[in-house]
Length: 433
Image (cartoon, rainbow, N blue to C red):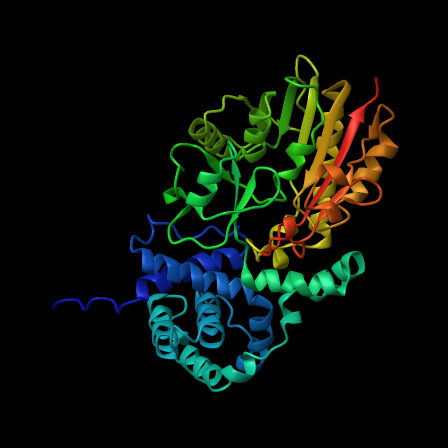
C-alpha cells in the first residue's frame, strides 16, 4: 500500500516545534537553516512562527490557564511547543489562515509518540482559542515582559523607555552592519542608512545576509550599532598591542584590526573560535588567535589595550533573542557577575601601565554594568575610570551618563534613525603610570 504524502506544511511545523521545544527547555534560539528546510518560503514561515511564539510568550502564557483547565499535560513531548506555535498563528498571524493552524497542529501532535494521545485535546483547545482569538489579540502588551524585569527596568530607565522596549520586542531588530571602508556607493548598494561612524542600518532585505552585495568580498560584517561602540572607545596608543577577551565571533576583533592595532583574539570556545577565524578570513584581517580561559590567562607581555566583552545575561539583545527575557533569574545574573569580576581582574593583570581597558556587556542589568564598574574602581588601586565624553559619540550623546559611562537602550534612535538598538553598557578605564 502506497504511503500517503505528508500534508503540505507539516514538515516545517514539525521542525519548528522541535526548535521551539528546545528553546522552551533553555536553549539559545538559532533560526531554522537551509540544511533543515531547503525551501526558502517554508524556512521563512517556520522562523516566523517560532519568532512570533517567542515574542508573544507572555501573552500566550496568559491564555493557557483559560484554555487548559487542568494545566499543561506532563511528559507530553512537543505538545506545548505545537500549541504555542498554533496560538501564535491563530491570534497574531491571521494572514496565514486559521485552518492550517488547527489541522497541522493536530497532525503534528499525532506524529509525536509522546503526544499523539493528546491530539483530541489539541483540537479542542485550539477551537476554543479560535473562538476567542479577537479577545486574545487585545491582551495588554505589558504582558510581554516578565513583571519583575519590567519593574526593575522602569526603576532604572523609566516607564516611557520600557514601553518602547515592548515595541522593540514586537518589531524585532533591523540588520546593522559595520563597514570595512566607508563608501557611499556600498551603502546605496546595500540599501542602508548611515548611523554612527562606520555603522549602517538595513531596514528591509529580500535575501539572506550572506547573499547581500559584497558579502563574499568581505566589505562589511553584521554588528549591532551598540556592539560597535566599545571598540571605538578604546584609547590604546596607535598601533599598540590589544587583547580582545571573549572575542568570538569576532565583530570587535575586526574593528580593532581595522583600527590598526596588533590584536590578540582570545576565547575559550574552540567552535566559536573557528567561526571567528572564518570571519577574519573573509574580512582579510589576521589577528593572533588564542584558545584559553579568560579568567586565568597571563600573556608573556602586557597589552597596551584590553577589551573585555564579558559573558552576561544578554538581556539587551531581547529584540533578537526574546527567549532571554524568560530564561534569566536573579541567581543566574549573580553567577554571571562573579564571572565578569573574575575576567576583569585577570584583564587588569595583563594591562600595561598607561594602557586602556574597556569593559562592556550586552545587558540591561545594572548589576552587570554600573555595579561592576563601581566594584572595579573600588577594588583595583592601579586603575581609574577614564570617562567617555559625549562628543566621542556624535549622534548618540544621550547614551553617555554624567559619570562618563555609556548606557544604550533599545528605546534609543542612533543618529535619529528609528529601529532601536541593543541594550549595552560600556565603561572605560586606564592603568595608572
